[in-house]
Image (cartoon, rainbow, N blue to C red):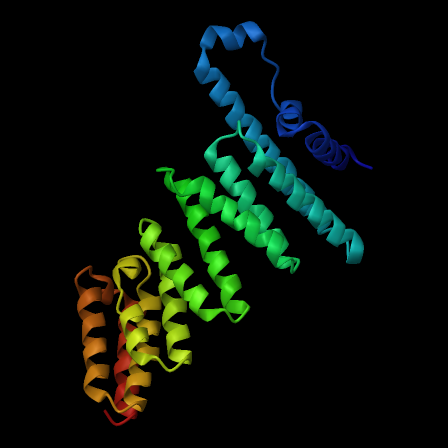
Length: 276
């Protein structure tokens, strides 16, 4: 076994047996107790942050190592990585970013391994740990975690519950526009699939998360909505939603970007092809 692989296994073993601080200390330079006392509480906070990051790196290395195998060996390796991430999430002395990321990464692994109950517990933990934190890097992980909860409900066919959670992403994490664009888009698609065009319209016309950074998805959403309205015979409303989209994009200059302008023209051409 090479030195790097041995180090990964040692870090994970120490973390699972004696805790993440012990594991992280293997990676950190030694500091004397006098050093910590001299610099005060700030030094302790820095050490805890470094320890958390080291523990995350150890879990990530274990995950990477697992993908070098197939079958049961890969499966068991990934579950060990999820457990290592969970250790980080559960360490009360670590910073919010390290804990929230640990919970989220553990949830990702469990979701991919089709272990939905364990995935949801970790995603919900990430939301609980991160929602009240002002730091954007923390809130983005928490928003993504809540989005994953909604996706899981949608995949299970629990559409009303999924819609409620997508709405919670939009309402509680409005400062995380990327996650909000996914929440709005999924909500609109669920409503369209269920034949609720009016509700889909309300979702898809929520342009705020999409401009100025994600205009193309807004165009795709309105494209889908306009076609549904035309097929329902509500031609005037179809033209109205296209006009509302163009106004929203032009207010930020996004409509002048070549890909967006081309997509808008394609939408107009589609309306013409449909005879409207």
